[in-house]
Length: 278
Image (cartoon, rainbow, N blue to C red; front, side, top):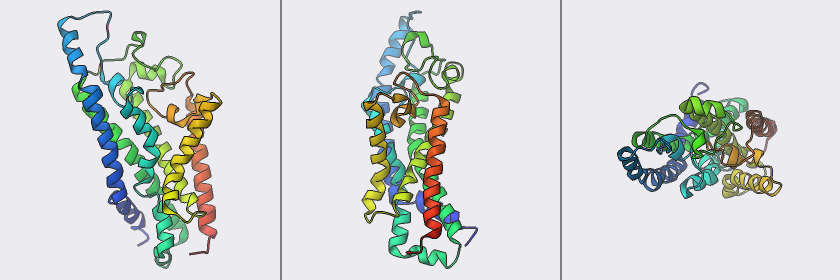
């Protein structure tokens, strides 16, 4: 039981109705983006090939995949509801485990620490996967449809410039840039899902547990927009297109991730290890 608890928690998360619903919504947005934004570019590609113009840069995967642009409804909507996609798979199960009494049965077999760690990691991993997988699918399909030639910043097609996070890498190795950004998104949204674990100690409603990370996300977005400090707006800086200027920086992004990890894990383990209410 001790060795398999983490696998049990991951299996619960990956096979849950919440995970299926989250992936369904995420993939629906991703594929709708392909149909409405990417596929229409083929007509322009044909025109470019027939009448090549050295002053024009044909549309490519890095400017048209869902994480490469921020103007479409699908791109905006996906990154707006990303916290919901992250929490749906498994973030409310600590709350339901406590309310149903399931946690008492677990504690007769394993230590609190082992259960709490397994739950935290499972919520984090399932949340990150639910957000990143639709992005990966969208990127892969876009790469099949459009060419992958290196970005040319002088064309003004891209919102990424020399001041952007990893801007130089985007110009020379765009797929590596995207991989790093997807990892950042995985970690950020996975950690954001763990906020639900902390709120489970103080609320009595499952839907409040699920919505709290999203509401926190919206609050930070509104606050940073109001005070014009977009460099710390999570919806902007964790979008691979980095649509707003001035751009953020990698230390800021990593600092937010580190702070989120310390706060969520600190509250969760401090309360969980000393809470005798279940």
